[in-house]
Structures are given as C-alpha cells and as structure tokens.
Length: 458
Ligand code: PFF
Image (cartoon, rainbow, N blue to C red; front, side, top):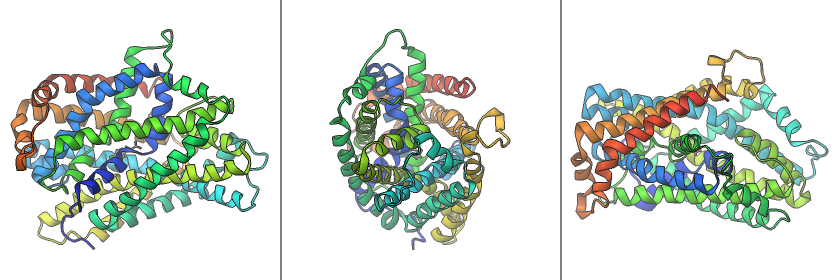
C-alpha cells in the first residue's frame, strides 16, 4: 500500500499508462464515425492539425506543470497562485463526472463480454434477437445496469488502490499490449469480409456537399480533448509521477501519435464489418452495443468468439482510461492529506472517492440512455448532461485557461526550465511560443463555444 506519492517504474511504464488513458471508449465509438461523417480524410487532417497546434501544447503544459510541482492539479495550480486553483478543481470535477458516466458504459461492456462467453458455451440468449432489441433489454433493466456499473467501478477501484507503480502501471503494461493483439485479430477478420471495402471508403472518402468546415473543427476539437485526456489534469497527475530525466516534449509527441493510430485501427476493426453486413454506422453506445452486436451475431460461431474478443478489448480500453480518471480525483485527496502531514492512505481515499462515483453514476445507469422518463437536467439525458459539463464546458475551458496562463502570465520560461532538465532539448520552442499565446487559446475558445452549443442542437 502506498502512503507516499507514487512514481512510475520507467518512462515506458509512464507511456503505457498515458496511452492507456488516451485510448478508450472515445477511440472506439467516437473517432471512426466522426471521421466518416465529417469529411473522411479531411477530418483526419483537421484532427492532426489540432493535435499539432493545441494537443501537443496542452499536453506539454500539463506534464511540465505536474512534474515541476510534483503535485496533482489543484495543488499544482495553487503553487502558481491561489487564484488559479479553480483550474485544477475543474479538472478534478471533470474526472469525477466523466467517470460517473463512463462506468455505466464500461458496465455494459462487461455485460456483453459475459453474454458472449455464455453464448459460446451454448446459452442461446442471442438467438433470434436483433441488436436493438437486445441492447434495450440490457440498458432498460435497472438491476443489470447498476450491477455492472458497480462491478466496473470495483475493478477500477481495485487497480487504483494498488498504487501508481504496482497498480496502474502494471495493469497498463499487460492491458495495452493485449489490447493491441486483440484489435489486430478483429481487424484481420473485419477487412477480409466481402464488401468490407465500403467501410474503408466511408471512413476516408470526402463528400464536398456534406462537408462543413466549422462542424468538422468542432467535432475534431472535442474528440481531441476527450481522446487525449486533456484539459482535466490527467497529464498533470501522471506527469507528477514522472522522473526528472525523461523528455517531456518527446512524450507529448508519442502519446497523440499512438492514440491516433489506435483510433484509426479501431475504425478498421469496426467500419468494414458494419458495412460488409449492410448495416448503417452510428456513433456512441448504439454503435458499440447495437450495430456491432448485430454484426457479430450474424457471423455464426466464429462471430461469438470474435465478439467476445472485441468486448474484452473494449473493456481493457475502458479500464485503462477509467483508472486514470479515478487517479486524478484520488491523487487530489492523497496530496492534500500529505500536505497536512498525514499519511496518504491511498486505500481509504480510493474507496471513498470510488463509492462517491458509484453513487453519482446511478442516475446515468437508471436513465436507460434517456428512455426512462426520468427528470432530464437541461433537457439532456443524464449521460449527455455529464458529458456536457465535462467535455462540453470544463475541459475546453480549462484548456483555454491553461494556455493563456502559461503563455501570458507565467511565461514559457517556466515550462522551459522543466523541459530542459538533465540536458533535454526543448524541440520546437518557437512554435510552442506562438501557439501557446495565440493559436491554442483561440482554437480552444472556438471549440468551447461551438461544442457547448452543439449539445442543444442534436
Ligand atoms: N481518453 C478516454 C477515451 O478516449 O475514452 C477518456 C478519458 C480518459 C478522458 C481520461 C479524460 C481522461 F482524463
């Protein structure tokens, strides 16, 4: 049990954990569809530009702030000035709110994985049931939804309780390579199905008539923040456990590249199979649990095995992200206790914060994706409401504040000192200097406004 602050065993361990945090449900259910629906290859280019002008910059700000202060977000910002603590608080709150809806979906993933195993061993619950009907029977059953939401959280809590090195790092070192192998297996089957090429065409083709540049920037911006786990202190927290000798800017390049490769691979795993079966793609839960279930179910016995592999990889992707979300919230309380001269007591803190997430997530689990008739805050279903608070408001807002603060108030020198420790070079310093002051805050402000408004025009 860790009662002090943790530290990564190696840079590879840190990278696995940070890439694990980035690669999650967002890559599976968001990226491929958004790319197909927003200009294909053009979307990919816009996404990569945003990564270059904003993603890498914010990631480097977060990592250097975390490593320099050796603290989680709230205390890290407090070291710069008490008045900036709220940026850290937005991060802790975002992590808490995202995890509260993420775990309901993670719970459905476990439920599907279990059902695929049962069907492999002869239980015929999938026979003659359509994807939509089956999914409705899962999400509209409150006992199922809550039980699996709790189960997902218990696993997440168990890993985070193990500590930074023994829990999070070790889990990621097993989960990430396994995820890669499983994804490759699904890709091979998906792209060799007759008619699969239409899925690849959907993902990459550009249709001028449907393309809307601003909509594509908005979709790519939101996706980038969520997918790279930015604007919520995840990289501040993970960076605070990083050794001083590691190269921050190099890491800030590797993580987005790996995340984008995974997102494209997820597209190759999912869309060719969906099109080969003549189904319409969609995004969000209906893609994961309705369309894909239908795809696997129509492939006979091998489909059951493939389905099991797919949901297991989705579970690994979800867990490597959920542990980072819980860690952000827990690290805050552990650091605060240490600051007061107490022991960190990771076990107790994790149990309490994890239980609070379970409680906070119950409205999402009960809401049956908005079909329950429950009270709808701001007219949004509970999942969208939590997503609106985090992805729609707090994450882009924190991203704007972070770049403004570092670019105008504190100055790049603060980051530079940390980045150039132990002889490391600050690659692209002048590019950083322009982005951090002008380009990043402007682009992120656009994403903030258009994304927040988009929640009400769906
Ligand atoms: N990046 C994760 C995904 O794409 O599913 C979600 C996420 C994890 C967001 C961790 C934010 C975070 F701190």
